[in-house]
Image (cartoon, rainbow, N blue to C red; front, side, top):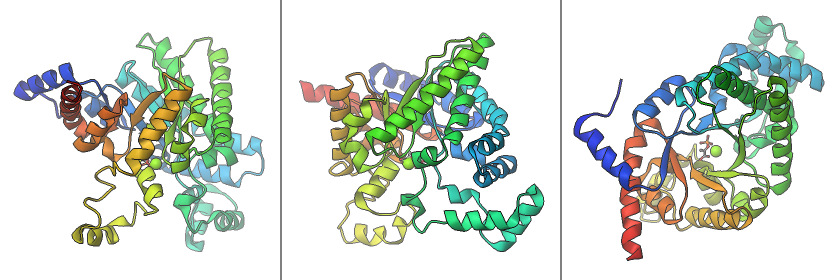
Amino acid sequence: EPELSGDFATLMGWADGVRRLKVRANAETGQDAKMARQFGAEGIGLCRTEHMFFDPDRIAAVREMILADDVAGRRAALAKILPMQRQDFVDLFTIMEGLPVTIRLLDPPLHEFLPHTEEDVAAVSQATGLDAAKLLRRAQELHEVNPMLGHRGCRLGVSYPEIYEMQVRAIIEAACEVAASGRPAPIPEIMHPLVATREEMKFLRELTDRTAREVIAEKGREIEFKVGTMIELPRAAIRAGDLAEQAEFFSFGTNDLTQTTFGISRDDAGKFLGAYVDKGIFEKDPFVSLDQAGVGDLIRIAAERGRAQRPNVKLGICGEHGGDPASIQFCESIGLDYVSCSPYRVPIARLAAAQAAVGEREKDR
Ligand code: PEP
Ligand code: MG
């Protein structure tokens, strides 16, 4: 198991004495969360819950949900996932011992959960007892030409609020369970992906609060929780003041924000960006090095507008750039509260945050 020791641990201790930015990790499994803590992460900045849905039983339940004809049917299907999802969060909260844990509700395009070819459909139908014709029809209806610009992120929570209700319930039930066992009370931060407008945020906040309060009343245990949003679309950045009316924190998703600002697919950029870099048109790959002139401007604007609406709005970054030293320096310069990166990059981020803090102090002299 990796652990920091000796001179390296001493160096880290010095860095921690200097830095202002908090350093969190992106993690969704107990194993990653443990590693994150060993490397000194001060919380989880992004738990991507979609990875928790790959288990065959859960995929089957989501398929059943998609095929259900009404709210009751959808709730019944999702109720099968609830205990497993609750346990996911119990595990994370237990490992994180009261440190902040930001849980992002389901993000991927819905059609990813459906079988696509007739063969797949037949296999799924046989395994699950779901109606093959209906399954195929629904898969065709939900098929998208541009899934990354489509039925994903909080749009799922708008079309199928039952999914987010189940997830919020799992989070708060897990927090109650951990607190009841006498371990440090978790402070979950519930985060909505791909939000663009005030009305979306309002809808999501109401759904989250209503569900959380329901669980809190049932369990008779007070849980502090926060509700916030990813900022990963240019519209969200520009209208951040609107979002801050309901969002207590922002987390900059610079992977999607880079994709949507440049209009370049994050999944296909590698096929042509090389030529841009070779010809000097791009100095660096913006998916690796934060484009401070463009994407960075949007982040700066969002931070200003968010703070103007809600002075104590908590601000962090959780895209790949959160583990990149130059980007961390930028985050320090605009006064973000934390960066979140892959567990392995946590030590680098701690050092970079210290260096950035020293740099900012020099500037002030
Ligand atoms: C992002 O878009 O930067 C982000 C952190 O979310 P994901 O990579 O899961 O889309
Ligand atoms: Mg994203």
